[in-house]
Length: 114
Length: 115
Image 1 (cartoon, each protein chain N blue to C red):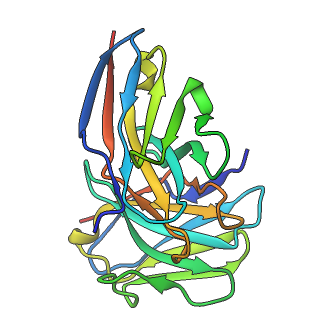
Image 2: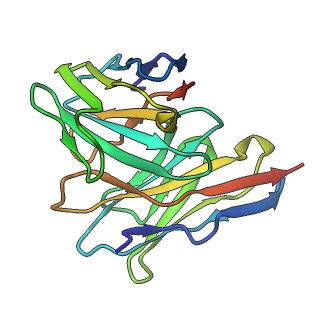
């Protein structure tokens, strides 16, 4: 069973508009949740994580994500998108008590249109 | 911030030869390193997990004799693709962390093309 899902392969948004990249998880317990961004032919860059505490997590480059336990979601958001935000975004989860490995979602290609 | 250096960034080799990819943590001790393979427009597929000083743990379906992983020190892990074939052409990415729960730090990846 998939542990983390990104329901949208592609998200397009106009520059200056708010953006949301969706992520849901399906693990029991209290998972660790992460967002990473990948630019073409590059490795992944860490954006933010949720381990415990405040459900709203702020990360790099103005991104934030909200952990919603009742909806088992961890959507990535930014109030005002930039063209330079165009990239591939991966949500990831570490299942508590597992082999402590990250499980990645399938990725969402974000395109910010000028 | 933590930096992971992966080398080379791209390599072209002939079928039947072996290629070594290095992954170094530059400013932290990486107790665990992970190797991933990524196909175009697809997510990362975990190949193996390596802990310093012990044998790597391979994911199901990954040939350990073909993808040799060595994690000889807390700052270096290597992936050797032995007897490479064109179907091994892919983007290989390493990552490292110092402790459980801390974010993974990724190398920039290696584009392998086998001709």
